[in-house]
Length: 220
Image 1: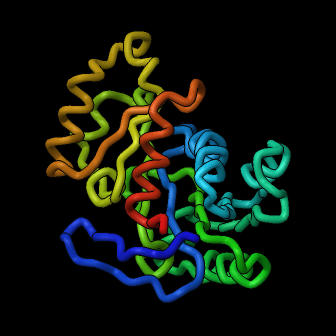
Image 2: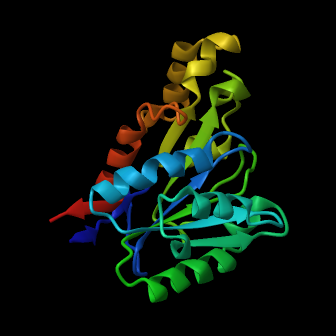
Image 3: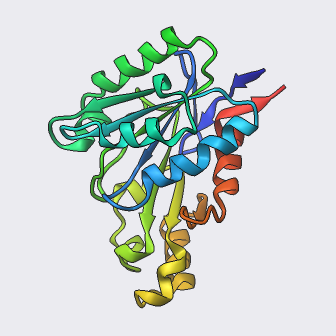
């Protein structure tokens, strides 16, 4: 069995969750690798005995949801799609009602679900999650987006519980000093966790899965 923990906020305070399954968010710009990260995470989380469901957000399609449903790595019924119809951050921050309803629906349909992953639509560096919606959240950036992303100090980079720097294998091909980029990310995040990944190969995805398990779930 897995039980909920109180997940610490960036200011060190704890925030109890009042709903059923734990809820984590995964946000980041278009093409940073959010869906690819979920595809790699699902088998690892399920191998730990964690029952998972997923909510995807797109503007006017269910493209990411259909991709996951076709993947064969999760029961298609455990994947719900939210069509934001407007700015992606609106439905994860200003008015998360649609995502809250979808998460509640998954709680009702699958009482065994212990973790709901909510993927935001592709957004900019100002995107953040409402803590009314999630207990803990990840922000994904990618090396190909530019080594200066941490220096721009976007709220997503600064405020997320875990920053994932994806596509680290591309650094030499796009003229990015990876060590410098990671060092600058550490500096602006005041020591909060950062993990460099390659979602195509699965490199360091196990570290992301471990971070999720430690922060949101505990084995008994």
